[in-house]
Image 1: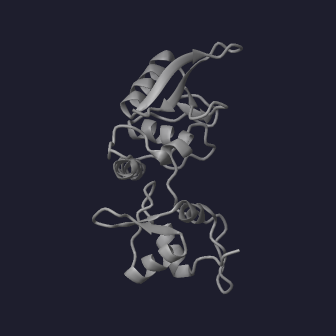
Image 2: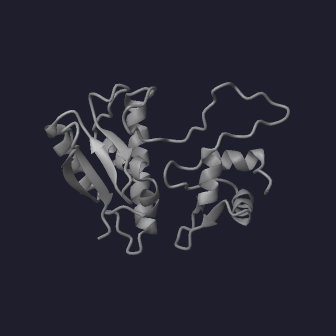
Length: 211
């Protein structure tokens, strides 16, 4: 098993931009992360450094406690997470959250431009196809839709489905569901309305558009 990153390297990883994984650090720090397979240098100018999938896994995992230091109970990793609806503790709303969501959405658009073969920002990229629920939730939250509360009422809810590259989006009424469909289609998703056979509840089946 490879040794964990040093405390300094972990700070660089934890401070990476939400969604894109863009890194800031000294040339030596970035080179060390590249050498360990936790970052890569983008081939196009300005040749910024980004986390690899292994680097993202390190960032999303709880940090290992250092031998001579205490770790506060419940300390978070600071990783941005879009609200999928139904969270027991959704966190604070307000200007700070709005800025976080806006920054994450702009970062995702930049990730599309950098990783889609034709540089297109109007359709989902590879990261979104491997994080379907989070990606769809971010598109909805960034457009101003409100997620459902813990009792699953009052807003949208995104959940995984058995179908490959598809998520289910539910909402409290047809008007909200139609608005969610319009938002997702504008963000590069394909949607279709369906009815749950047993409950007769309406929901969207949404998948990332490829063209």
